[in-house]
Amino acid sequence: MTPANPYLPLHATIVEAASWKLATDLVRRHPELTVIRYHPAGGTYDCLAIRSSNGLHIDLNRRGRIHVHAIEGGTGHPNWEPTEWTSYLAADPRDFVGHLEQVVRLGPVAQIPPSTPKILVYRLLTAVARLQVLAETAEISMSTIDSSGYGAGPGSWLPGYPAIRRSVEAGDEFGFWHANAPGIEFAVEVTTGTVHYRDGSRLDLADIYARTEHSFTKLLGVVLGI
Image 1 (spheres, rainbow, N blue to C red):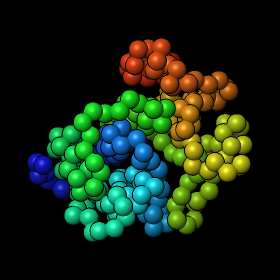
Image 2: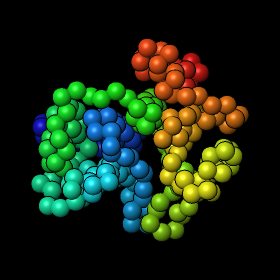
Image 3: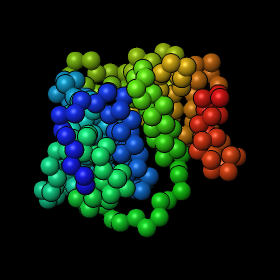
Image 4: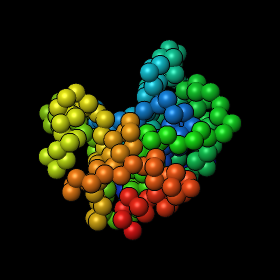
């Protein structure tokens, strides 16, 4: 991987988009993985965490660096030094993901699997983050805020989405994401790929993806109403 200047300042929107791209690229190759957002150390850090049911734990800290805390299987010390975002941005994304896969002991992938509703959700959130690069930051948050301390609890956006709020209150605390940027606002359910709007209307990502002949660009246009 190409070395980079770790002291080069980066606009927050660049790191936001880069973290979503890295997370989504990895999960597209390994659909069994899951992405969550949490704030360790009482909100000091802001991480997208990539996890598996088999112990994998990667933290993409948007206020710091890229960390591997545990490899697939949960045992063994990861051969990974905390990596600056500038190093990721200077690398070929495919090479970076391939190296990360080797480090965390995920198997090689000959062909990217078809996008499931969950993967379409992550691709959609990545696209929103990328649209806002060098503009106003997109706030992409979960239905429950995990700050490991003060400030934890239900997302502040839930009152605008009564159906989602009821699901969260019934125990589905981390099953939804919310995207908010100038001219963009929606919530989306991870498992089903259902997009919710404040007026109560909904869209099915998998259905749109099929109807647009698997064109993600067209899907994005439908979701954003453009």
